[in-house]
Length: 201
Image (tube, rainbow, N blue to C red):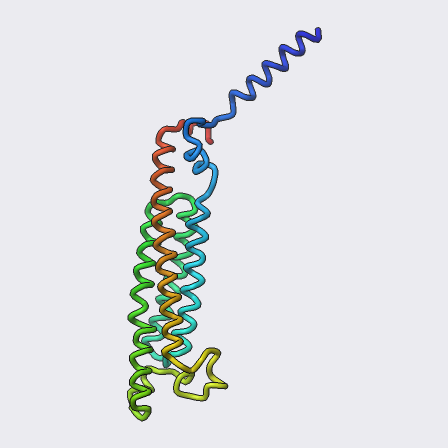
């Protein structure tokens, strides 16, 4: 009777073991299958944070007009697509890996629209503070009362350099997240093409 129970127990163990599906020949692929692409996600979130900080500095330094409104809308679009893309790349989306690289390119282009313009107009301000065109470009944090208007130094060159550094970091992080996401997405797709997913795992 005891021997019969042992035989039945062995059969149960063997049956249970046979239902554990794994690929011992491709551990990396197996890990991709059951783990998210957390590295691209973290890099993307870091890029979004740096982008927001750069935006705060630029928007706090320039005069508020139609151009600034466009910049704000552009930053909102970058935030929305950035969040969406990092979530998709987290699940090995090849398409959104390209989107992250594209967002990185846009962030690099922002250097020439915000911080670089800030440096140019601040140079004109130092050369001729009475220039009437300055009020169309430099905000009160640069030309007004520093103590009541600014939360950073009034030196626009320093502000612009900080913003440029943040945007360069943003670009690198977005592009790195996209490239890593693309590499892992290809590995994941190649591995899954060899697997039997009819069992739902």
